[in-house]
Image (cartoon, rainbow, N blue to C red):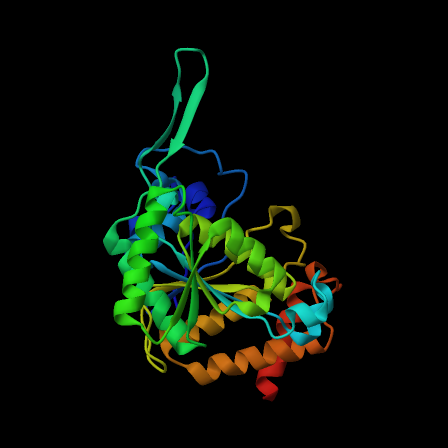
Length: 329
């Protein structure tokens, strides 16, 4: 195991958000585990080279080409009271949001703010996708759907956005030609978010581009009760069960939460479950990953919760409990 710094910590120490050495070390690893990055101190730093040079995590994603983002969210029976849902609406909900991670408006270099002759300004970020990017992501998403319940919802705005029209055409073709056993539905993004909030148990796998996937994965977090317990994996493909692929990036979905930094009350479960995903997809240790999930479930059932879930436990107390639960299984 080797350690390094990224984004703000890297900027403060080295004057760059992601060092070449960091990329090389990551490329030579089986997996990369990342803590939450970002904060107001670095949000408005502008340097040459486009968006990836201004965001260490985006740079790392691009260099590792981890285009397939997996963001699972499930309703834990003992945490349903922590959600805004009636139990009968959310019980049993288990959603996998597939987010495209290396394209779209987040990564475009066609962006900027221009001064207009009338004294105003114009801002623009081009949302662009190639057929190659859509095809490989569609195949990864269909593979995940095939391993689950065999159904998938593809999200776009093909009614008003040209990139969305290409997205829908390619996803539909990949589905009918290569995955006829997987039931595919197309939803417009606004309706998908509404329907997910209204009836979360109706969904299994949801695939979306970088922007819509970012929005929908947070919406799905309501199912779990807190963003603090959501893990994620960014992979260069989908491995077969029991096999591994990498190097992928594994990180909690939640942000860096600078407002509670240093207080010892951040929820560690998102990171712990990200480790479980790392063991499953990056190392091929499915049984160990399942054991971690069981240990986390026991910690929830004990009522030992951090403040984001209405409890008073510290980060260390929850972590120690999960470790003890794991050792006892």
